[in-house]
Image (cartoon, rainbow, N blue to C red; front, side, top):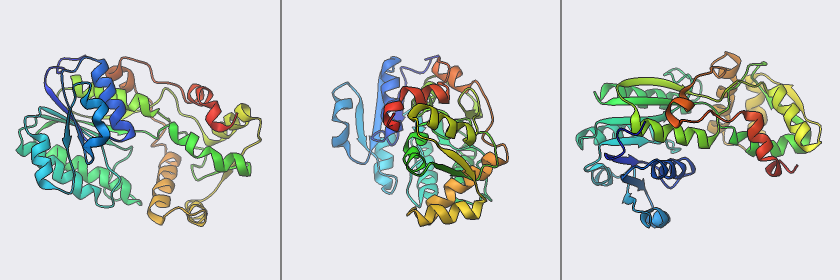
Length: 292
């Protein structure tokens, strides 16, 4: 599963959490020509010391794209967070093709579509379309919700004793950030052709079950409270979340209610060589972060 380990492999956003994990995985699996793209090269001095070619890469700077992609065979394009990320990523795809890149793996999201209520989801769709139209080989990695986010979101639920959602009892197949990174690195090392894949955990779990796990692991009672999409949006904004980010979280919940997040695949094992970590096992392994 490492047939491309001696080709030049570029990871964008290599200074981020997912990017760092992906570069670590490439090193662990014997990749010999790794390029780490980042806006701040000084932050990746540790990778440079391990033989990684660290290059300046800024999606808003066309000249940096040309120099970062020079001589690269395969790219892991990690989706960004900027408001103009669709434009940025479409530009990166064009620059990659112009530089002679042969393959792109892209970290997308479930149910990417042009008419999504939240712009964050449609951004993925337009990036996917640009990649498909490029003529390059690709793997569109539709990464499901990180299990790690359930740690981040646990504080409010544990403090209030209430877990609010708009999933209408729909399951969500959480996948850990580490499993996602390993899968992306594996695709970069071995995938061929053109494919869209769902990157999931081993089984979906409802928010009722998440609340029960919070209670079990901390001893603090947490009850799941179902809301409508507009009610959840209003509550998130009242709690201080920016409107666009709140809309994205609501959209994810509504997609879960529609069954879009309950998909189960073997993609993690196929590309990482490991079975995905179950959500309950992940929470138990990180119980200290919950205050347990």
